[in-house]
Image (cartoon, rainbow, N blue to C red; front, top):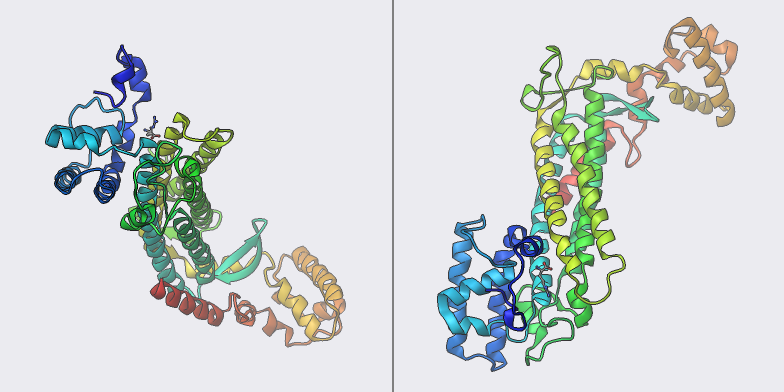
Length: 459
Ligand code: ARG
């Protein structure tokens, strides 16, 4: 039986019903719908709209239903319920009869669905925060193990300056820390209960909406009933946090794919996380990281879809808003899965230390060191930059590295150069120089790791 059959003389067409129904995807809201219903029944009793016995009956039936749902996370049996709200009500009516029909007094599916979805989002955001922390933990282990493992650093995908692999990992730790804070921000803002907003104009039930909100674990009750039922900013906030988090995962994945490529070869993946080619026997492919990168597109797509759905919607509730769920659920599950896969994959990565150090030395990546050296000899930086450029071209023409130029060859370009130039061209020397906070010197990276470990322990 539908919830709204009274004014209709014909049942819904099966074609329309199939199109309209949302139970197949909103069943995951069952625990939250039950939780909201329990709190609502309590409020109805306090308002004198149902008796103590009726409330007790409802509480027992709802608890039993919650147990059944927990035991059966997939949608059970055939049902013609339209959505999760109708389903819960129909189950209650089947188990306790008339009293169940009183539960919907003074409430609407509009305030109920907004409440359920907020409860769901708050809980899911906590899973995402935990998964982010686990990924950070593994990146920190990687960083700590590689504070001295040299790696070519790039700008414009051209070899730029040597870094250490730990420094590379710590860059992503910083990003993931911000992702955690974005999720926490989203939770803080969504911590508002719309229950008691009615269909759009508020409820006639004499309830204390703030007490009701607190009972459901919300910090506040919404201030305006029209906004309460039609606000989906919290969905956008969470999708935004997920999208930015996925963008970070995708950039990390791209870096790993590149460092694992034949062209770079600085990283290797274990066989456990690589796949092969059906045709080319030599291939070892980074599918895991490509999927992290690939799934980013769909999460970003869901965020955009939600923005477009909301844009131009008149107040208050419109059925368009039912389209908030499938994309959101898919985005959140994808993000969670990708975070878990990343945490799993990081320990399976190896830095090919010797090869990576050789790679880091190529491409005149110590040219900045030479310019800095000239500055230390009293040459103005702009002139030092120019002279170094000339020396790079000279070395390039000879097919040698900067440190292979003779002192004479150096002095032809800049007489201020001494034999101590060779020490400053040493890659390790260059790395060690970058000790200021946030730099790639092993010492600075160790400090950064310690800092992030402290943050993680307090998180
Ligand atoms: N299934 C609906 C949704 O997800 C619930 C609210 C329906 N309200 C209504 N008046 N049709 O948005």
